[in-house]
Image 1 (cartoon, one colour):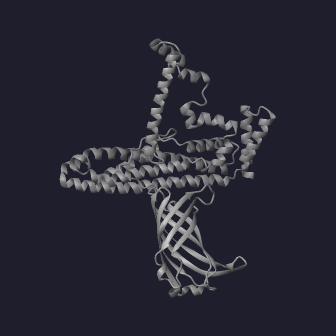
Image 2: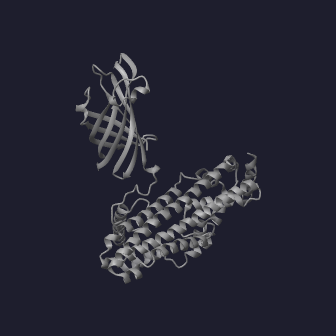
Image 3: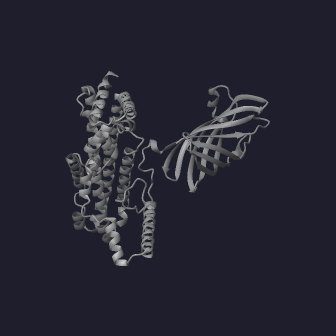
Length: 487
């Protein structure tokens, strides 16, 4: 707490200089805001820096990963072209390895020369960087805290440079793709470009995904930015010192803004010119409004069509892929996992009480339309009736499964399971492999999205156990399960 006490004095001093505490109500609000800043833990600055450094490393890792794949694909194209025309291969492809080494060096050098104004703007980095400069400029901040702020600020600058670096590589790969597509067509090698184009596309989408993660409003620094934005002194500092403020002259006077608009046509002058051309009257104005509305509707239709085919997280500068992309390709291993649970119950008979199979599963998304996974289940016995409840251990199971999307919310589901269907009191009893029975399942699933904090989707399954006829004692062939995905 002693570490952050001078921060309170700094904010109060700056606020009093600019005179934003105009009445007791606003003073109380600002005092509350400053108190919240005071309670903001210094460790949070370290966490913000850790997340920034993590993203920086991810940009490096993924860029190098895709560049190696793209370089490898271009080398294969070079060898194919060499067999057809060695001269064209030298002129068009050159030394592939040297070119990509130069690309890495050129992008790195260009990123280092970018100072305050960057090619790729990030609102989150701009806001965090300006906030840290606002805190760092105070002479009342203790040196220990200033070191943390300065280190975090440098990390922000490094990540901003990394955005510029990867954007330079992205633009180069786009131009390279266009050049190769145009030149290789006359050699009949356009099909050889398919893998090259895929890797370029997935690299673009990987960058877009990281940028979306970076600019997530609920992400890193949310609390710090929320508190700082309510301090009037910071608002004025942001208008003068942020990249956004410099670009749009947020701190400029009204006269400067009016001067920048000099020479532009006003609404009145445009209307006068239209009346001189087409005449005056309500009919003319109505016709103009109808034409403008029609034009706007057509533009909206075109925009919707473009957005329909534009990949999620992509930009208007990206080209539409010539293949059906796999949106899971750019996700990490952990992001492609899905966790689930399901339950099924069986009525009692002469041999078994009322039982419920409670299962847990872990799936891996191969692509947008197929999931494979495994799981385990525990069979709990409840007794013969509501009047005779008796909790027992009626069995256990091991599961594997695969789901393939059919259409809409319907999936084809299948799986192989091993089930221990005998009552047991000790874990050692499960080691008897001869007591385990096989089940082969095939059927349909319907997935329904849920607006819940924990359960994201509900899965209703109707399955046929085609191996049930071989089991002794024979179990039911039709299985109905209700499952819930936790992610």
